[in-house]
Image (cartoon, rainbow, N blue to C red):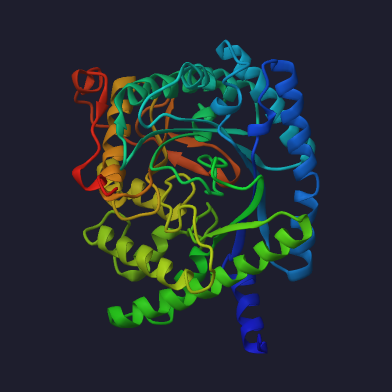
Length: 454
């Protein structure tokens, strides 16, 4: 039974500590939409998405109103489109046509974003995969709600360096084509290693081929709640600190579990997973960096930051897994720069660099996220950054990602406004030494020895 104290406690989390359900994401399989005809494929895709998701937004709003829990986003993830379009798409422009249909369906059902304009190429690229990847810049320019991702490596397969090198070019081209909006297209494009099949968060969400025909995944976020809880134990030892984070994560996750069960029942779609990730927003008091400060570092990036983040991530997972039987996705602490006011402040103060962020990604939930860099950064340099991050994921058997934005026309010291949940970001310096001879070698980096467990 829930007692009145717990009700009051949850109300405070929502009203004063920025607790929210960040997203209800409906995953939809489009494998049965594949057809030799592009027009038939497009029609099947539109009909299936609008059929399953027609009540997604209204149901989310009903649950939010009924339980008093803010549900910020309603989203859709779909089967990686390079699989769906393999038979009918003969050119990159054919894939752009599918992207436009996806965007129309997303607008018509009223969601915030649709993820899954994706290719999974950790070991090699099919002709369809390459066509889709090369279509990404134009697709992101000509759509509004589509998010794209490419998985270029895994612990089991190694790193596909041909795909890494290509993605360096694709990110640059996307930046150029969307430069009138400060290269915003790159904010909807992420390159992953060890991508999970059930991630509800954009831009890396897609509906894995092992999933049911449709599922409901929920992502909960409560950095402000964790920070407030830690303020109550300021100066206490690590045992007290860890217990506090675990108990708080449990409470946050139970809110997500409630929403997921309700959404699943009302939409008649199976419940998939709860993602435990602490996802910040630009709002004051809703920052992962502020939690690290409360743990004891002056700014994110100061000595001790990586250890503090490792502790936070681990305790969030330990508390969260007790609150839900189905935990998945990414589950941990996000450290995006533009979406976290504390991270932005740390960059401006000179405490946080890309190199320190890379070190932090060894223990955080994802990777180098929403980082603005100079627009004249070379494609090979971007590819090198992707390769470094993928190597961390491959060796450590975890998901890592790069969502980096070379803002055309901007240089170090400038600020870029993305708006909404994407926030704003100072343009960060990038190591200018060349890595082109490395990324231009081609082929694959082999899987590590500990991957051979069959």
